[in-house]
Length: 310
Image (tube, rainbow, N blue to C red; front, side, top):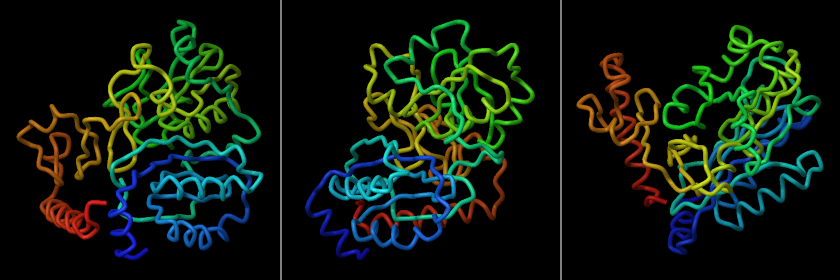
């Protein structure tokens, strides 16, 4: 993708569609798809990240309306991906600087053998979610990482305090009991982690397991704010950092030192330094790390300027 192409798109002043997508499928030939999919996305001016694995596809990308529609149509033309989930929002500019397509062992790393195409929990639509999690007999679990939970979650949800999704099996083994926790509801950003987690729990004796279809993003898109049980903002893995109801950009920013989401109150800390550190990581960074982060801050600024802020 040339810089001239990018500038031409900027001149057209087209809105950017951001699409989060995933789908589990048996895809043994996934390695062969990297090159043609890369060529297709570059030709369409699509940016973002796509992860390809034997178990399916996962990622978030941005592009024009026509480009995103073309990508979704291409993926869904394979019968195994006909039901591919995706959530959309609109941004004034690309939240990604470039395109990355990666080959992985898993499209979301649990580290345990599970097959969501064979066994999974019960999907719950956003419109039915409030009633489910308001039932006192239901244990509600946030399957996201601790730094995501820190800026927002559903009222009353349990925070497993996991640093990585691969920590979730240890949480289940040490904190949950299928005899005691007979009804469990789980959620995550876009649905992929709680879908895989529900498959894992079903395999380990938890019979009544539910998960939010489309994840938090679909809930924030479809459930009116006045009816919502969501509190705070939802962390997203792109330059927007977080979104709120209606998938509008949130107020959170990202600490480049520790990758934590920071709310406006955190920016007032004397230990916060843009692009380098925040109160959570200030005392743990070495001089070498500070120098590298400062250089990265400079390079990001130069890249953004070179791309014209697209």
